[in-house]
Structures are given as C-alpha cells and as structure tokens.
Length: 215
Ligand SMILES: N[C@@H](CCC(=O)N[C@@H](CS)C(=O)NCC(=O)O)C(=O)O
Image (cartoon, rainbow, N blue to C red; front, side, top):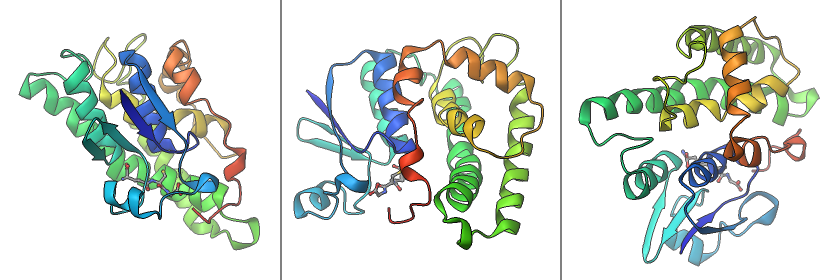
C-alpha cells in the first residue's frame, strides 16, 4: 500500500493527492508537517533528510520532491497517461513542470502567497508583493490562450503539466489581489473544478495559513 506523508494544506502535497485521485490508486495519507509536526524526528529525516513534505512511501521505496513523486506515480500507474512514455511528448510535459516550479511557483507561492497572505500585515513588503502580483498576471496572461476553449495546457488530456500549474488556481482566484481579465484561465479553472480530485484535494480552505510564517 502506498503512503503519502504531508499536510493537506501544502500545495506540494496537493499535487500528489490530486494525481493519486486521478489515477485511482489505493493509498493512505498521513498528515505531517505544519501544526501536525513530525518532520524533525530521526525516522522522518531518514526518509527525507531535508525535513519537507510531501514524501511518498511505496513499500521500502521512498520518494521526496513533489515533482519526482508525480513522475514516479505516473510512470508506475499511469499507463502512458499524465506523463507519456514517448520522450518527445514527455519533454513537453517536463518543460511546463520545470517552468511551473522555477517560475510560477516562485512568483505565486514565494511572492504572492508568502509575501502577502502568509506575512503578517505589519511586516509586508508591498513593493515585492506588487511586483509578484504583476509577474503572476503576466504568467497567466501568457497561458491564457494555451488552454483553448475546452482543453488543457497540452491538448485534451490532463497531464502532469496541468497538475503542477493548475494547483495554483484555487488560491490565485481566492486571494484578495489584483487580477487581469484572463477568460481562458478562468474557464480552465471552471473545467478543473469538474474533476473530483481537484475539488477534493486542491480546493482546500487555506485560512489556517494566514499570517503564519512558522512553517
Ligand atoms: N520542492 C519541494 C518543496 C517541499 C516543501 O517546501 N514543503 C513544505 C510544504 S509546501 C514543507 O514541508 N514545509 C514544512 C512544513 O510544512 O512543516 C517539493 O516540491 O516537494
């Protein structure tokens, strides 16, 4: 039986939980990190020396880093869906996954979510926040046309690219920030909400994280 370790309020844990729901793979989920604690124990550090979630256990195998976990799960259980066996198609997915982590997640989670939402009001750096909000607006404007009228980032089928990018949308559309008109992204967000895994694992209230910088 697969085990996912990590608090459900973590966006990186949400990526893994969403994919597992799409794959319909039986697993158990243990909440760890944040107020649940448990990341500093020798047992946890043996699994992930960095003391971060998510961690996936598959028998004696342990995988950490959310995107490595997504690829592992897709390769093991996806039968070519989500992350193609074809190197050229897989590279298309990989490039968006890399971009999502190094650019979008940096500007949205690192800049907007941490800078604005997780930072207590009196400590906020508004220049940094405004710049990050503006960068996110540019990113989503760039993606706006890609998702088309009824598809996903790379066509009709949902891939790991959609999971790593799409996981940001619930927070992006529910924060009190300035957003440009991005009809394609808004419609894509609506479509993702038709998916059980997205509703259950991504549309998770995040108010417990407001003004909380401790973890
Ligand atoms: N690049 C890592 C980031 C891991 C990470 O920073 N995880 C955060 C949660 S999103 C964490 O473990 N924070 C400590 C805590 O939740 O207590 C990944 O994608 O898995």
